[in-house]
Length: 408
Image 1 (spheres, rainbow, N blue to C red):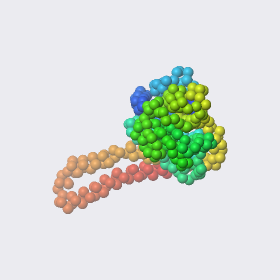
Image 2: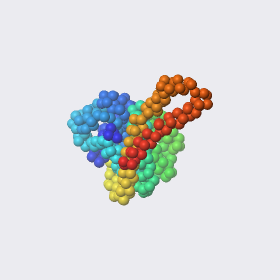
Image 3: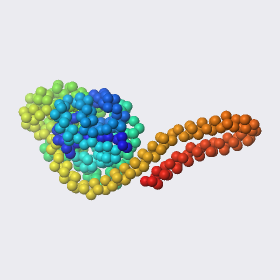
Image 4: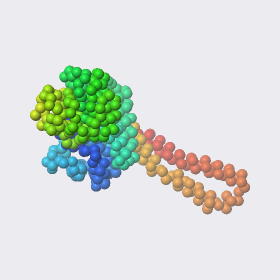
């Protein structure tokens, strides 16, 4: 576990609006991660980006400190000047070994989330890991770490009430939207077909909203969500040509530059002058600041939900204590499992060595004696040797595991 390292930028030290500057465009993500992986001698890596955190999880023998983190962030070429990089690094948290594992488990259980009890973070973690796994960026070390992360989170969500009556960013955003009393046939533009927009769409559909237009970079994904909502699907590039008007925009994409510019917004208004609503759950925001300056808009964003988040944390204090106990137990079990795994890896050659000794004994050292045996005697000898071979392979492994367990 000593090679497990995490560089984390979270809502605890950094304003949510600023966090968006650390987001890496999905189109370039694999290439950038492959580049830093090779350049910095990182064995395995995956990248997590949510509405309240950007984290790099890695397995590496390299010393990961602020100096390493500076070179790492600069190599990603995400457009930060030296001064901004310094500010972010001052606010970064760097974890190593057991501390890194504890941080990842707390994150997966939503203990580190803006909204404690929000289960979406586990799905986001798994998706981030799977994406990097498919890209060949991860290996066996992060695989076993991820196994422990999923197991622990499931136990916390099952055996505590931390997610009972959950208050999520999505549900809070919907509550604010509901307060605006939009009619059920309001024209709603959904920009982005990811998990966040899917979740808020479920709330809208449940409350009888029915007039949807879905825009996404990949048309197939837009079509899938539009089918679920009984709406129309468009490519993101078609947004500038959309002329059917709207009452509300719900947007959440991974874009690093604003999607709703003043030009796009003016075009979408199509001559209408009434006050519109934008729900922007993207980090960084999909809405350009100029839109809010120049137009009368009801604007709902993640940043405005902080006070509710603080109250949510206080309400779940006792559940935090219970969850932390589960995390502590899982870390203890994981440490034992890692030691057992090291023994298994170290003893992989034992079966081959025993077979080598057996073959040498039968075919060289005692070849004359074996060849002089009758068929029945050779069959008995073969059974005895096979029995001994299996025992000599399994016994050392069992004894080593017993020693490790008893010592712990």
